[in-house]
Length: 239
Image (cartoon, rainbow, N blue to C red; front, side, top):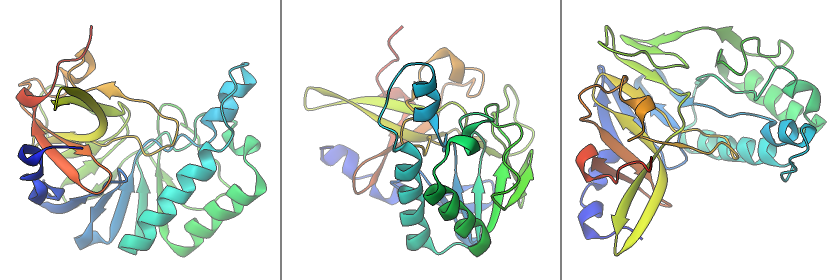
């Protein structure tokens, strides 16, 4: 689907960031091999059931689909630790709406791995009975992991979620919109991992304070590969 110009960036799947070697996976997960840690952001478990409660009916399988994708990434990387960068649960009542199979699967994951839940704006108080450790921030060497990215001057390298970045490129006369990792070398914002999460274009105003120079790279998630594009090669957000 992407042409040869994009494919020459195949080596960009593995990057060096803040002293860490990181693998950018097509699932939207991030692998930190030196720490045997798998990072994901914005799982938003039970988003569909939250919408259903307000009369907007979506297929009620988002939690199950997200867990399947997470389990697949775990099988590939075999992590010792899993870190979820906030908004793992769509709201404070998500645990009560989960079916028993999903609850059992989450408990199995937290028992088999060191599991870290970073708090987010949707889940300031994650469930206490599913296992794992709840923190506001976490650190891998000098890299700070948090949910909401900081703005302005970066005082330490950081990886965050929250904004659900997507980017759009033009290829063969078509506009292609994909979830993406985005980074200027000081901050990285991860794509949302959840099944029903949507996205915000990296050219939108919300990203301007995070990447004030407007010079960054976006790694778009393809089916079999991650594709790197410089910010000046991306289509502008529709305003």
